[in-house]
Length: 205
Image 1 (tube, rainbow, N blue to C red):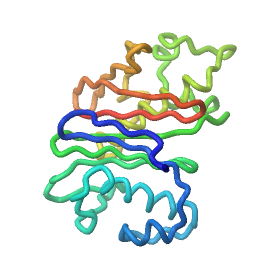
Image 2 (tube, helix red, strand yellow):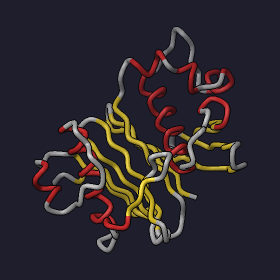
Image 3 (spheres, one colour):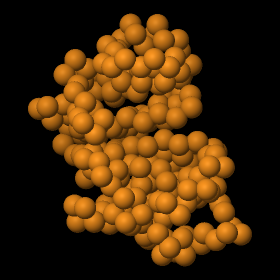
């Protein structure tokens, strides 16, 4: 079963992660292609992400999807709020009838340690115990994914991850991280899950 992880978050919000094992033809039989994606694997990711929308809510109106200048897909009438992410052989989506949502899925790589100063404020690095001698790639990936989920939740672009998205008060037992997003003066709770090298973070509000 390619459904890797799914969760009914509340009465109007659902989340799913799909492990892509199907061919492009499988998805094309179910999902209309909205934009020209030339790279074969990226096209497969794109189709799998769109497929998830109707998997989560069978009446999701694929044909009404539009794409904003910021590249965020949306529905004009906001019948559903949704967010899609993909990485490697995984696609993730979160869909809600009532709340704005954002999701991100990441695989752990060495690259994350090289960009930490671009997305984490010095105070955050101290708070989460990140130093040059203790570069926890798993943790760094979770924090990056958390900020990406907020960026997608906001959806309007022009976000400085280091300046505008402030993380604090991580609760490992609940797998949540509190966040203050200064561009909209929003206090958010970011949820995350870890599956070995795969990290998923999402936010709804």
